Image (cartoon, rainbow, N blue to C red; front, side, top):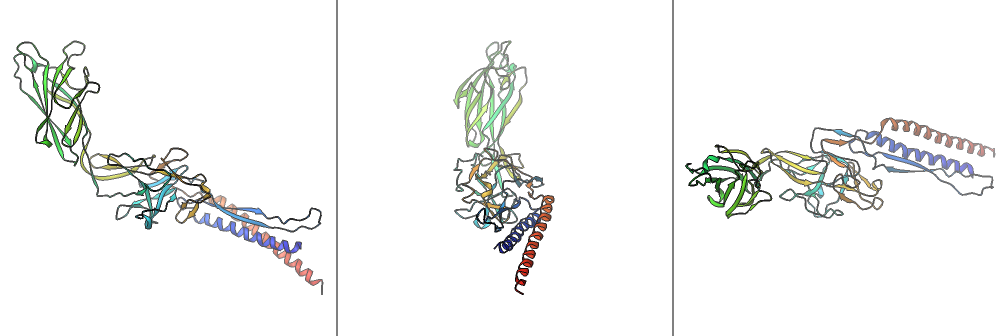
Length: 433
């Protein structure tokens, strides 16, 4: 009968508003929790079919369904730790639990933010035990091509504070002025030495010993020099000899006119480089293109290295680690050398609200969310990764308190319905008396 259905509807209303109260209390309790995604309770009416002209109505009541609004984003909060990470937009950071950190098949979990610190073994993890995952870089800093729909290539990010690294020298540029007076008739013809430091594959300091020997003519000026290069790492062995002639015209005076390879690696006139081979491997030395004023020159009467640059560095100690907006982790050493060591992808799914919510603001893939894909941060639909930042809670305390008042009134009203139905049933019982 209608009175009984009213009682059931009132009970359903109490239950639905209790569910809403639970979501509100959870949201308010986590208003200061980084990365928290607020919960929401939605009400749906429940209809009991009846004939349109039956003259009676049976209350069906209400049903409550709760969900977590994972696609909402909280405001970013600045911090002082370089490894406090957040995703500025869509997507999440790949993490796993500490228990699974060394397992062959890691259980992928996702979070939008985390305060990561290295533990005793250098593994980056949060206080709650979430381990950050990434793709390790190759020795040259490049990231290998790996599948994006599986966790097979992801590894725990390990940062050892006492790690050291060296950067071998592979390129250098020689800007040296040779005295034009030394190639004139009657000059001494004394060789001019130049020693340039470079760094080997093991971070050792080596030198290229270069000797410039002028060609003294019987009369006039030859404008010709012989350059001999020796490598200290090979016991002073000669790795290249070159005959160089300089231009003496008004338009291009003092620049290289020709370079002839006598022994060693060839000279490339298109790039102005010598392709040398030192003990550790190939080394490209730029002496300048023909007619170039920035390489080797022959002017005036002074011998002066004007600009000598090279890459590489000796072995250095780790001083800082930072993450850029593309997700690349770069290590900086006290020698000034920087090296890319990991790449953190951003995980995305077609339906973020379909993810399964776990403890510690983490989520897992479900049939409702769809399969995950590992994007480069900032590519596709995903946002960039921000260091020195945490994502705040999506809870709006003012809105939650307003909803709390509404829920309290709705709960009291449903309780009043039950009380009224009880009184009506009591009146029905009293009819017999």
